[in-house]
Image 1 (tube, one colour):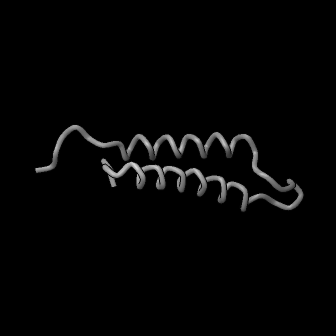
Image 2 (cartoon, one colour):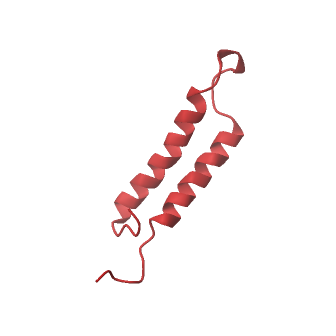
Length: 64
């Protein structure tokens, strides 16, 4: 999925990666920790989204 040319698909995959981190970060919490997400999970979600955005950037080279 490297070098995605469709910006809409690239944005969708980026948002999906961030939401997946938030989902799995909030589901694994025990009941005594309370509901919600921590600041660390938000930072990890942003880092995951930025990584996906970077890895799916369009390349300058065309595939032959």
